[in-house]
Length: 93
Image 1 (tube, rainbow, N blue to C red):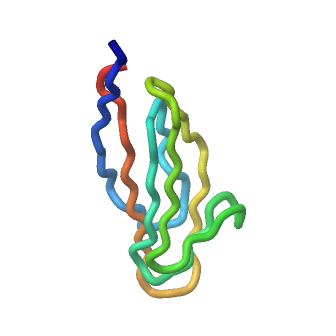
Image 2 (cartoon, helix red, strand yellow; image 1 turned 180 degrees about the horizontal axis):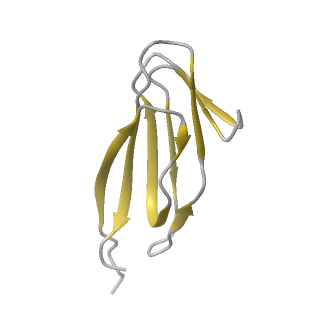
């Protein structure tokens, strides 16, 4: 019988100041959404999110996990800084 993967969403507090994303271990997915009007730069411009844009990353195999460490987030322009973060954690692996 095939193993059924179960994940649960965890909504983190939004980031509103430039800094580092909290270190995340063994997650199945992460979604970053720019909910403000500032431009968000990840890793010194390696990726940018304009207003209302979203970046989603996920693993593709059951019981595989990814680690997100030391990710720099910088806000520029605009008057409202708000990066919404949701992760998926596997609950049975």
